[in-house]
Length: 410
Image 1 (cartoon, rainbow, N blue to C red):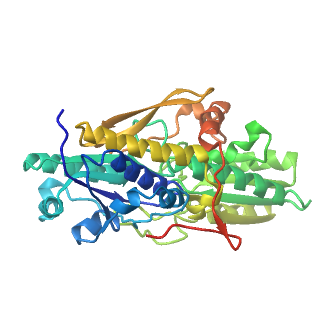
Image 2: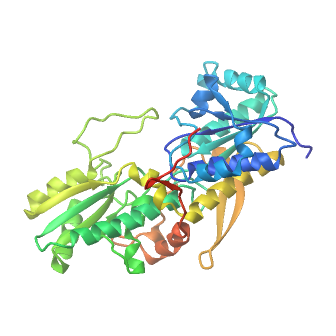
Image 3: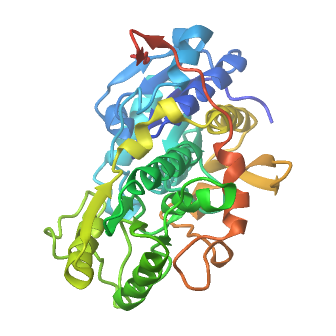
């Protein structure tokens, strides 16, 4: 296909990760490799919100500065800023879609790269479809990102490996810390994961590699039962006095109620999702009442996604590579698609990069499969460990100044 000549725009959307800037660096390297086709690239400040409010930064010189790109890819959070905004459905559009394309016309933008998760791929699908419908030739491509690892059709997502590495290591450290006393106690560690337990599952990795690991792991893929929970705790107390439990923030009872409900209002985010927090705190109170022992709740919270000092080298490398792959596919003529990974083998670890329709990924959730969860529903399996291990391997070499990691600033 004849190459489409024009400028590019890139944005970051949704929750930040330790690898999302590596994805941005990958897009910039990809554009640099196709400079004859894409002469200029703009960064959308705060994602689609920045484009709609005409807040674009010229990143062309940055794309040619490898030293700054290297610093960028080891910097956590979103260098361009992020947003939680999606484009409207065509039947409810108030002119936003037309304004989006009009701004792209004004800046000569023919390539649009969006780094994000489920909701972000909705924007990719809608913008691609609208541009085609109004006859504006533009290649729109999704670059996968989310610590939740819940994007459909891909083996894993950039950002997950680093967050999982942090989770596995932090859990191993917590288990050792909790084991120093002989007084019976339970520590409940709450880990991000609304509908999918991929991140919480990483807490159990230590059991399979000789590292510290919790006594039980509860994921939202299985209904939560207080009776079963109490039995698991009793069995753990029979082994040792200091019990550690890992739970997803989104665990819920058989009737669909979140374990955290009742501790806070039913506040919702901009997408209508109930804001979850407090599963560990709710279980802490239950433990104190039933077992009359010391109990505490620990929330790893946003530290899970910004701990770039403990990032997975595999994760950062793949984030950059699949972003550059997305640019190459767009130059070759693809649009309305998302770059994905297909695993070829665990050991040796081999993957292939492909693309899939963004519309088949948008707003869908890929949950932890049955073979990765024990029949009792209270732990992960050896098969999950084999899946996860390649994603967390390799250490980065951050630049330190005065004992603190140096970060990139736009």
